[in-house]
Length: 508
Image 1 (tube, rainbow, N blue to C red):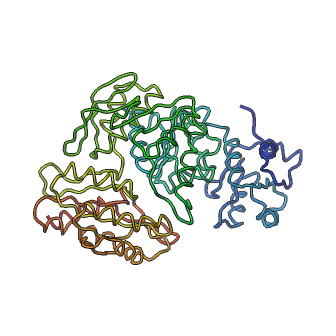
Image 2: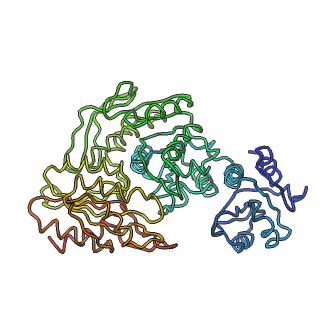
Image 3: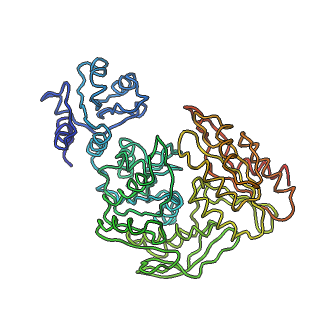
């Protein structure tokens, strides 16, 4: 592999029309080797370029990165003069478009590790995390963590680091660091969720995907700080096919014609369908459910056979078929795929608390938008017929404002009682968010507001045990998360499952 230098990075940006200028880049400094890129001073390393980005950026971050051994920095034109005073004599690359520039620089600085790792990218409004965990189980075989790196909304694991994720898809310097770690750890695969924000804002620019899986599309993430319209959201999602060799597409998705038209840019398109839609390459038949398990017969171009899932939820047939289709592209043995699906679980995804015969059970799930609500409640009503549904739910602060109207309206179609509560309020008062949801609740729907999430979960358990007949307590949106986003901080909290188990013991 050719050595990357500051001069070669400057030439790369110049060739792409992204170089506004340089500082302190001489023949001598230009020959400086570069071995990585960072945008977080806490992980900055010797030999790396430091990217000065974001509204919250402070010049002290650059000072810290240089103290850690960074050899140069990348910034936009607006910060160039200030940072030249902060770090006199330090080589600098100044970009006309910092997001695109840092994506290209990061890939080059980390040595394009995607050339040595088979990357599967998963996008969609609903199901990304579940497919990611199913795929990881199928690829790893009997040894978890032995073959697959994971980057997603729940967890990041790259063979060297493992932690709870902050973003579904990290910023490009972090993304390429993780891919480089996957390569260094000798893992052949990377299984990653690709968010609409990552595609829109070029976090994954330059990344080569072996396969891009498009699960579905619904209205979500539409706000002044995310996507201004559904059209922008959808177009951002479709961009995943522009950097993939093979496309995997759900024939049961809305807007299918547009999805297939964009997927046609790939070398090959593999289609899957839980409904057995005409033209499917991978489909299911004889779908059935039992307490905590779903089974079906899978049909693929290379095999067919019985598949049993470790998770409840009839909609997980879609997720399993997506996994099977991706594995078909990657050439994974059928027996290994089936064994992986039989043990795959996703933290906080359709987590069933209870056992057969219990009068009260609970489901913990990350369902947080209209499409996921539709699929969640439709499945629960079929798998737990006649049970009362008591739902603990909320909406986040500062984004996705449509959820405050859509989610109460959708949940009201299915639930016997709604409890509105805290869900990552950020800079908005929880009471105001809940009041907006209450105002959108259809007339005649039973609901209450309890701002403290733990109190809301206890109240749900109390109602479930006090009422007559079987009940399902549905704890939505937070899943297995251990933090609440409050203000600028991520405040530690107990998981919904932990709190629910405590409440069950109290009210049983």
